[in-house]
Image (tube, rainbow, N blue to C red; front, side, top):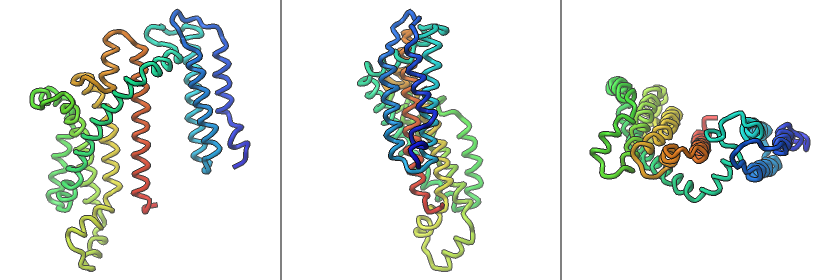
Length: 306
């Protein structure tokens, strides 16, 4: 790519416009911490410039620049509506610089809550997939059992896992185990259904060819059926992972003493909306990060399908 394609893009103009907006006088009655916002924007622009020099694919660079441009536009509009013209209630809608400053101030506390939330998600997700995938493979190999299990799965997956929280609190020893239980239920049914769907959809010619080569049942399961079902399994895993984060936040608001859901709920109860918005943004970034890494894993394991 040419230097123009790498560095002379509208995203960098949006960054400059965001900086120029910060020169306008502040009208908010609350501290707006303009320097914190400028520091964040400069850091984001530096990352974009470094990435622009390293990324080789034009599509990947365009995606990065589009995301960065959207962030700069959002921060600019947010600044104008809060710090600069005070259109929004500064108690409910703090200026972006104030949110950045709050994140830096609470970074240790936020990191502890992120680790708690991720730990719960990983435990519930891994436990659910470890049970759902083998069970789906076994049941899916029988067309009759798979057909019946499909309707049973639809029935149980239609029940929101969060309604089991009262039973979890009554039966399980700790509040954290209740959250793991909710994540387990949120993940199990989509992965189980995806696995069965993948197995039932395997081309019969492929199985017949393996039988001709005297492939044993176990080898058939793990060398033929499982690889052919991976795409559907990952679809179920993606669905379960997305729902898990939504339900985790809800579970932590109801039955937890730590985690990002608890962080948001705790400060919203005290009317601290700066920390509330900070927590919401952190949850969004964590979900995007985890989803990105999971998609990378999926692409790597399914690279043979390209």
